[in-house]
Amino acid sequence: MAEMTSAGWWRSLGMEGIVMFSWGDPIYQQIASAIVAAGVRLVQVTDTHGVISPLADASAHLRVHWEHRWNESVWQKIARTVLALPTAYLIRPLTKDRARVRMMTTGVAFCGATPEAVERYRRLVRRLAGAEAAKRIHLLPIPVNPAFDFSENDIKQDQVIALGRWDMLQKRWQLLADTIAIAIARRHGTRFRIFGKTPPEMLAWHAGLPAEHRARIVIEGFVPNDEVALAFRHARVMLVSSAYEGCHIASAEAVCSGASVVGCRSPFLSAVAWHTSADSGQLANRAAPSELAATLLDELELWDRDVRNPHAISRTWCQVFHADKVARRAIEIGAGA
Image 1 (cartoon, rainbow, N blue to C red):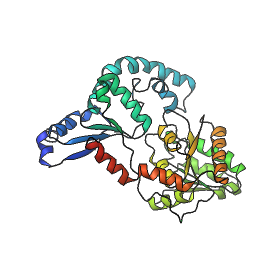
Image 2 (cartoon, one colour; image 1 turned 180 degrees about the horizontal axis):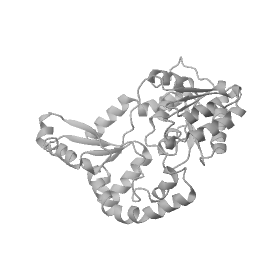
Image 3 (cartoon, rainbow, N blue to C red; image 1 turned 45 degrees about the vertical axis):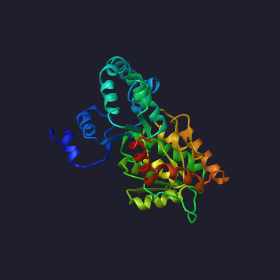
Image 4 (cartoon, rainbow, N blue to C red; image 1 turned 60 degrees about the vertical axis):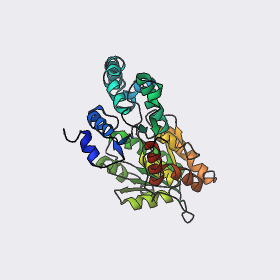
């Protein structure tokens, strides 16, 4: 490790620039300092939502246990929040946050993946290191494979897609299932396709559906990436039931493919909110099946009336997320542009 963190080791690589995925974690401080000392222009990137400290977003940070532990009882969430307050608001800003900000400001730039995350990181850096240091915080989206697009030959169908690791608590598969159950009763021609790792309880739910609904709700499971891209090009809407996400690549892939996005409003879903911001979707005010289903039905009605334009959605977001565009912006940031 001593050699790994030496400026001479990095200088020997003959590199003029590097992008390091470190999330601003202070455990990488020695490595980052050695890179900079070697004359290499260091750009750090993160894919998180930016709610990492009350100094970044006090109100959102107060809701962490309510959103991230959404399945617990009210009393459990109250207890967690109360117990965390002294550490979060008194000890952390003086200890871990200062070390994190030092790491974030080592090098040319530190990049967040969404506009709201960037504002949170800037606020944190500005409060602990000053306005000049905060200028090093930039927006750099996580890149999307150019296979996710929408061409003149593609045709949208009355389909809704959901994609996730459904065995993970944060994905809230039960909210997804309950939402679809409401929506499918109102949309007699809509087809729902669910991609990703499927836990046994989700398969059991699907097996217990009425035959008519089971025929229109397809559990796709894991499929190759090119099949997912094709499914996105055919789908009108991506339905997101998550409690929290960082950059959320799946909904970025959806909008690049000309689909719109429906999810829930939350400070921990800033990526999903961003992806709906260009006439490309909408958000339910609460993470309740009735509200999420109502929002989904309203979005599908916009498609029925040709209010949504898949070509416009795709053009807008491909310019933001496609890998070549992100790479060009990373080089610009690294060069100080």
